[in-house]
Amino acid sequence: MINFSEVRQTNEMIEKENLDVRTITMGISLMDCIDSDLQVLGQKIYDKIYSSAENLVRVGEEISRDYGIPIVNKRISVTPVALVGGSACSSPEDFARIAQVLDKAAHDVGVNFLGGYSALVSKGMTKADRLLIESIPLALSQTELVCSSVNVGSTKTGIDMDAVRLMGSIIKKTAELTADRGSIGCAKLVVFCNAPDDNPFMAGAFHGVTEADRILNIGVSGPGVVKKALESVRGADFETLCETVKKTAFKVTRVGQLVAREASERLGVPFGIIDLSLAPTPAVGDSVADILCEMGLEYAGAPGTTAALALLNDQVKKGGVMASSYVGGLSGAFIPVSEDQGMIGAVDAGCLTLEKLEAMTSVCSVGLDMIAIPGDTKDTTIAGIIADEMAIGMINQKTTAVRLIPAAGKKVGDRVEFGGLLGCAPVMPVNGYGCDGFVNRTGRIPAPLHSFKN
Image (tube, rainbow, N blue to C red; front, side, top):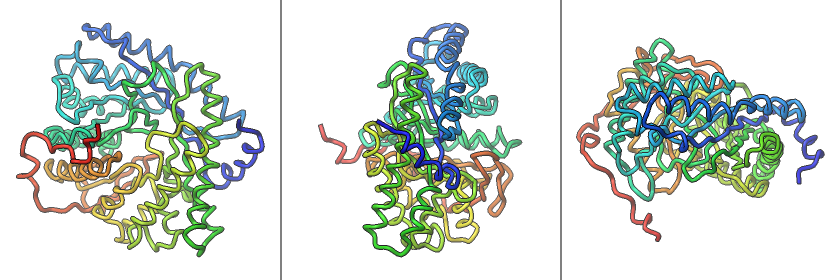
């Protein structure tokens, strides 16, 4: 049981160190909405979302007020729409109409984002999968709150290179169709390998088909809390460093457990998992890069960065699993560039490059996240970057993801302003050598040998 002494212990972390519950995400199954008539399907989807989540924002605000714990976002994830819309949709435009229904539902219940405009194509694409993927640029240009994801690989199935190649083109088109808003559509589009079914964080959240009809997943974040704790053990040995991170992660996760229990009881929806992810914000003092610097690095990206990040990620998970029986999602440390002032500073200093970020993704929580690249980057180059990142996830049996923004009209050294949690992204250089002959091959990269464990 969680007691009020634990709540009181969090006061200083909340007030001075940017501790927050980043999101309460309600997962909603749309499988019972499937219909061959597009208009009927849209109405069923709207009704299911509205009836399920109409009290989500109010309850989140009540819990925040009652316990003094900031709950920054209230979000919804739904069944991957490619699975729901196949019977009714015969064109990309049809799928985009579903995206508009999702956007209206999200606005009407008052949530910050809705995820699940998604397709799962790690071994191949159905007609519905392809149509949904082709509709993504249009859908994200016409909506405000809808987020999209495509899972193109897994350790068990390999990497669908046809989908990877298609996503290179889709990302470029999405950037172009939202060019008037800093290509923000790409900030709401993630390409995954080994995507989890219970991720509460956007833009990659969707409600997996193995989940219950409705579920509540909680995302907790506290990079500032971890950094403050490490300041007290500056110069200590690695054992002390690890213990400090682990104990701090335990305390942070307990806050999430409290919110999860209360939200589940008040909404009458089962609790799913707590995702303890050190997810930075643009606020000063809320940076994963600053944690790495507190460990002894001059900048994130300096030699030793991957080792420091591996240590951090592992100890966060160890502390989290001791605080809750249901830790899941992506739990670990996020390294988005635009959302982390320390990362931006490292890029500006010339210390952090795309290649170093790729190396860091082998041990971080997700992957290449919120990285702006020149708008004239070739489709095939984007596909090659995606393929590299998917390979890291496939071989290492972990989730990896790519959220690249080829910022239309921007070049290296420019900046792209998104505002809010999405922050500001410096445009980073990309290796200019071609990979066309590789990514234009058809078919898929097979699963690795160690995937055969049955």
